[in-house]
Image (tube, rainbow, N blue to C red; front, side, top):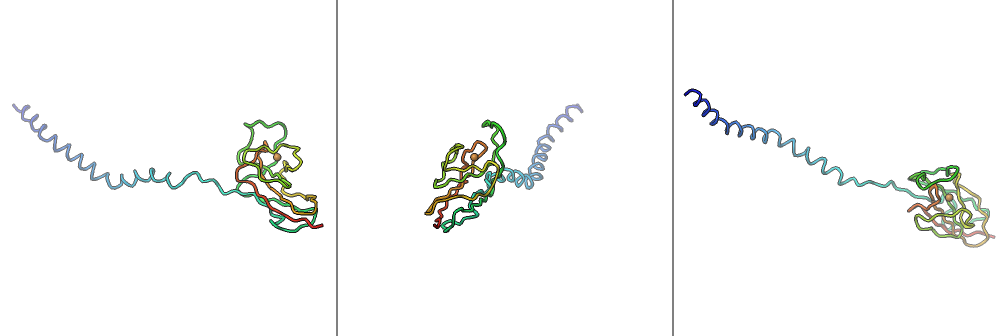
Length: 170
Ligand SMILES: [Cu+2]
């Protein structure tokens, strides 16, 4: 008799207990849970993998300058690492990312990205030691000078090229 009564009381109090737990879980955790759940979802959206600004440029001569031969040319590079080409044979797997060296094209245009500047091409000078200047012998007249960065395999890098025009006096 007593056991039956106790069971009934338990059964009656169960729904109330469940309700109280649900209410407290809802009311207690709701306000802090919302901002916490939104933060990780919103964070990646406004920060795409930003490429650092990079450029290669002539420090001298100036574009359009009138100069005398030999012409002192000096090169600047930003947002990219300048380094000498390693000794020996380099495999494509050994090419260092975001590292390159200068190439000066005389009366040449920028080559498309990924083009190998073959060594021994007369119109292109490699600066494989990491050098950043040269005295160039130029005939009198107007000349195009192109400065282009290549990787360890002398392959041109996208966005790292500048062409200027100079006039060499007699
Ligand atoms: Cu090169």
